[in-house]
Length: 134
Length: 323
Ligand SMILES: Nc1nc2c(ncn2[C@@H]2O[C@H](COP(=O)(O)OP(=O)(O)O)[C@@H](O)[C@H]2O)c(=O)[nH]1
Ligand SMILES: [Mg+2]
Image (cartoon, rainbow over all chains, first blue to last red; front, side, top):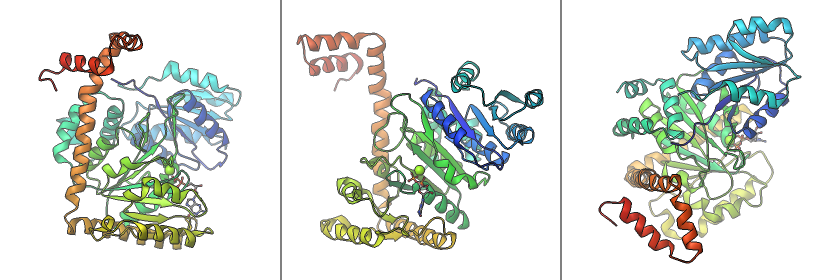
């Protein structure tokens, strides 16, 4: 059997149109050997969840710079769960104040990366925590 | 089989998981295909090929809209290249199609080439079967678009669109290099740009020069101009025309009894592929895993034997009846 390949979706929910960071992340994931599905900006949580299921990804990485992460990140997780895909992991990145971390963890977001995080540390986290599902 | 039932009912989760398992070469997925195969053959498959940036994904998005308006369900398989250095891939075709993400009559799946040459991914043929059994009326397959000879698409499609854009001098070269033989319809994309009339003339001239038997069935590939994708009204009209042209080509295949020969071609290719992956690959994998291959290579380097003698030995060992 060929090896399992990790499939990761990089998505930008909400209104902010700055996708430079998301593109950098997508390239970095490709260089780490993942198959990256990039969906572009201005995605609704419903669109992201539907796409994640159609693409059978192991992980959804959300990027949000607009400050709406408290609403958007949990909304994506909720949409996935409602569609029977609670096994798809969700992580988030962006300008996220410390005091929001616990709230996001409590709502199913597995990890949060702020602008200080190195790309290597994100890849390392994924390699340690996400296994392609059986 | 539970999985087959779910796929027949159009369950996206089960289908996308199965496609994943087919890509990853999971054995059990192969046995599911055995059950699906008898149910296939209903969908109309349209291939879209052309250089990177020619606007293939944008075109696919426009076609999805048209087919939906005509009451058809649509599957999309979009192929992007795997990096030969890292094995990773960025699959970005979806960006142009995300507005359909929530439409339950549309199923978009991105595939990476994973080393396959010829513009497609190895799993494309089986992924088409899966979408077919799900009940997708139309399946649009977008090739990588490396500009290399992406002729594999013809093995899987009923209709092939070759997408060209004005102002790229090398286009006609690419056509000469073999793309022309596979085109059922030429699309001049971004026709708002300078040079679209010239490109049209060049394609016409090239078709005129083709040997007469090329169009013996009575179909000479039409050229459809597609207006700027950022002008929704004129683009929509172009998409209507293109969708009509695809339908006309399909009618032609049916009327001239040519559908059968395309289906036969697909069957032949699938058989070749299957023999390769069920016979050749396991033998090679075994030889590699047991380290035998290294010894054989060494023998060749020492000129102790030749490749044919070795291959015949392998055949005697692994194949009961002999060849
Ligand atoms: N000017 C112009 N640009 C277009 C048109 N169609 C697509 N594009 C742009 O061309 C680029 C590549 O399009 P895409 O559909 O991704 O091409 P693909 O690589 O062949 O799939 C994108 O930036 C599109 O926005 C068009 O009709 N006119
Ligand atoms: Mg594309």
